[in-house]
Amino acid sequence: MCKVYGYARVSTKTQKLQRQLDNIKQYDVNAIIFSEKYTGTKLDGREEFEKLLKKVKPDDTIIFDSVSRMSRNADEGVKTYFELFEKGVNLVFLKEHYIDTDVYAENLKDKIELQGTDEDEIFKGLNNYFRKLAERQIRIAFEQAEKEVIDLRQRVKEGIAKSDKKQG
Image (cartoon, rainbow, N blue to C red):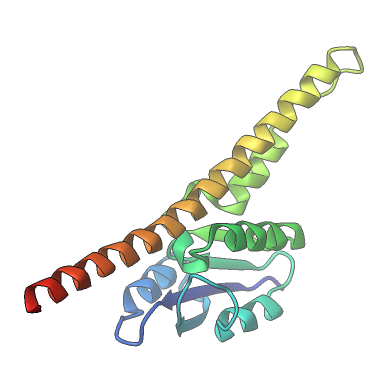
């Protein structure tokens, strides 16, 4: 029997999970929720996410409020996305449905049918190109989540520097 899971994460102990939990439950009231307060810049150490990854089976679904909840490291996020996709796990990103695994799978299905002619080489190239475009969209989403972290760190650093200048 397929199960639906939700994963919610905030980066600090003072942040609240409720908005994410509400969004996940609105999407699927029966979702089994895994949540934690831990940085998203690395997958290591995220105990609840690791438990979820061990529990999830083919045809199960994981719902995330946004791609940044899965990972804020582009390389790790893309790697995990495709590992789960290859395992047959459905991923739903409530704020970025365009990278849900069913959208990616649909893009793979929309292949140009091979005709058994010389033109098949062109069709193979086009099919590969469309797959690469879909993969690029997924990478861009994770890169944007990573950029948000970099920008936030820079703003904090600049704010501390300004504060230190005023006090000095």
